[in-house]
Image 1 (cartoon, one colour):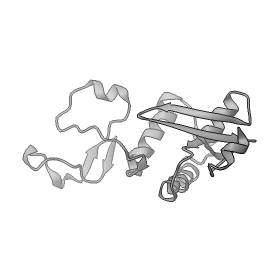
Image 2 (cartoon, one colour; image 1 turned 135 degrees about the vertical axis):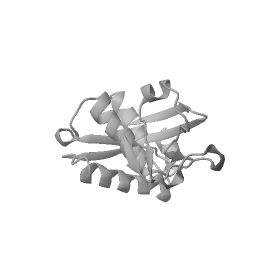
Image 3 (tube, rainbow, N blue to C red; image 1 turned 120 degrees about the vertical axis):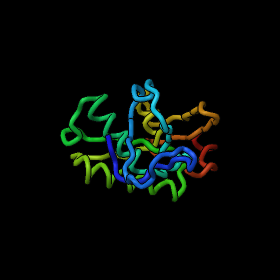
Image 4 (cartoon, rainbow, N blue to C red; image 1 turned 90 degrees about the horizontal axis):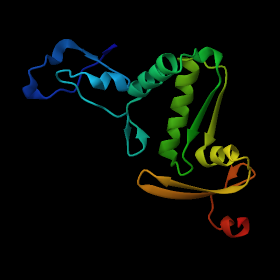
Length: 157
């Protein structure tokens, strides 16, 4: 899809920076074709969303092309890490704004990853150990709530 904005291209590439449009290809099949001046971008930097336009296009592709659903007809569930800082919590506000205003979802629920993992195993109370992606975290969940303060772990166990 064509989007407004200037593409970040190298000065020596000879591309016309004054066009004001760049082509955004979303999806794994788009990577299968060679394109001149193509750049693979991630909307995340250090776990924080830095480009909401790319996130919007990824969600649009996932909902409409991969899942083949109309977001207006489905409630959405978004998961967030338990260790989010206040800066990272702004993601939740912007994600909710995007879901309600653009996709017109009827309902939105935001949950912590550890709580969803605990409920998926059929338990409201558990110790969730998540290992992968270069880090390992352990999160105590008590009655569906994440225990934030670590001194509660002794009473939990």
